[in-house]
Image (cartoon, rainbow, N blue to C red; front, side, top):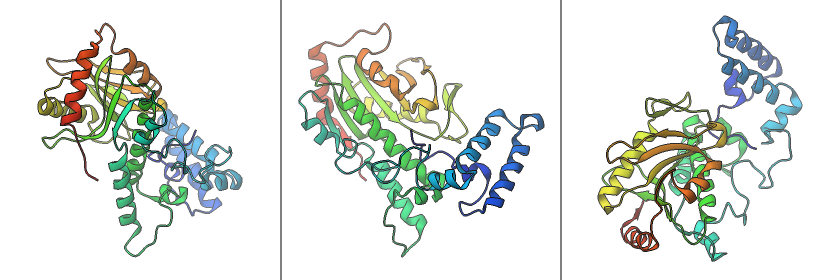
Amino acid sequence: MHESPAASTPYEVLGVSPSASEDELRRAYRQMLRQTHPDVGGSAAQFHAVQVAWERIGNPVSRAAYDRGRFDGAEAPASGHSYSASAGSSASRSPSSASNASSMKARMHGHPGGQARQRYLSLLREWAGRGTTVDDPYAPDLVRRAPREIRHYLAKALAEEATAQLVSGLGIGFTAWHDVDPGRGSDKLDHVVLGPAGLFGILSEDWGGVVELGRGELVGEALGETTPMDNLQASGKSLTRTLKVRFTALIVVLPDDALAEPLVVPARGRRPTTLAVPRSRLIGLLRNGLPGMDRGSFDKVFDLRSRLQEGIRFVEG
């Protein structure tokens, strides 16, 4: 399993440059061990992160493997780098082309991850500097040197594409729209998914770290001041008002290692239930809906799909 582009690199954890010498790396490791040790006021999580960082780049062999993109010492990805799908793979095809391959695929519309990937490429080239030729914007060494806020856009694009791949396999009873503009100046909805279990608005994210629930909002070191659940609720409300539809639930989908169990904010008033789930739990939720929830009739789903198909607009790059 390859690390998230948004995660702190071992060099960042140790506070050194990727070009640091072995002596500089060793001194930084020893210093960070002293600073983060729980006995002197550090945290167990920070102390563990320093140890993991050293395991990955603490000797020339593991460091060279990491710098080549071989994150766990296994074989390098078939694509030649860590962050982009190989040509012709199912992950690199658009959902529409994937759905044409089999009549059993869900109906897919829009371009998942399109805006986030374009934003990543634009910011990366701006960061690299005018006149600099970027031959491969997904080269591991280049991705890791980029500021974390730029890497986050790539992580988000990959997260959206991963969600779309899962949704595409749900079957012909499901329809999904990606990169949806909810109107009224709200943030985009990464995915709107309609099926027998209801209508779901989905945010696909990857901040490269663990999150938890605090006072009805996701919190974590990597999130900063971001309020994803509030933003998702605002976007869902905008689409509800624009198209006169009502969501069964709003879902934040995260990598499995970002949270162990679903985190739920119960419905309040006319607001739908909002929850964060590990990616491995998403398909079951979309198929079965929320516990105790009535499934919609075929006619109701068909009418709602027609309304969404006519009214949904997509974000521009």
